[in-house]
Length: 258
Image 1 (cartoon, rainbow, N blue to C red):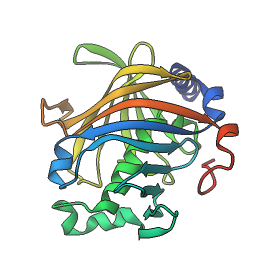
Image 2 (image 1 turned 90 degrees about the vertical axis):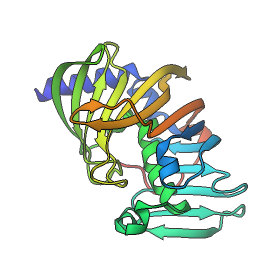
Image 3 (image 1 turned 180 degrees about the horizontal axis):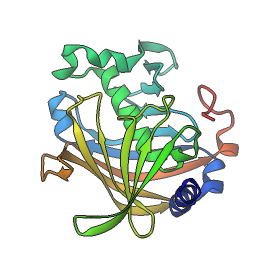
């Protein structure tokens, strides 16, 4: 089964652009908007055509001109989130930001650094999946073909290694007949251990050889069924520009993941 699962992972990676293409990339520059009930619940402003950068081979994600004009909000893996001014000086930072969500205040509202952690790791995951599966340490379990809603999907249980920040360690991924990711089920543990969610991926477009879903939306998940509402998060990706390693020069931040 291990060999057949390896073949399946390669088919999935090929469907989204291929291993060779991804290996030559350094980062993705994107423009996106995001809204939904989670923004209201945590007293955060929605994102309107904001520019972001997702690094392909390490958990680093930047929000440009956020939380204000001329600033950069940076998610730098599990170690730190920080806000940089126009001179690239740190004006705010938080060490071990995930641990801070254990405090009661996060149930009521999020500050800028809270959002930078959640939005940073989550959107980084979304933009680099399924190529993230190329890193070492992932465990895959083939769950077979499943009928979900009006479609039949190839389903995988994926357990993430500890060095990759994500919603929860084990998630269920659903791929269509073309091996494109259409749905993933997870628990957003930063929100709460009760925050079971189903995340849909639609409107795939080709960006320099990468096939990326440009419309994503998240609904509550109850006993394996997606509820009709509310829409917890809705993301529209307006544009993506992949940068090759030779274009970007020195890789930003820490060393890439193995």
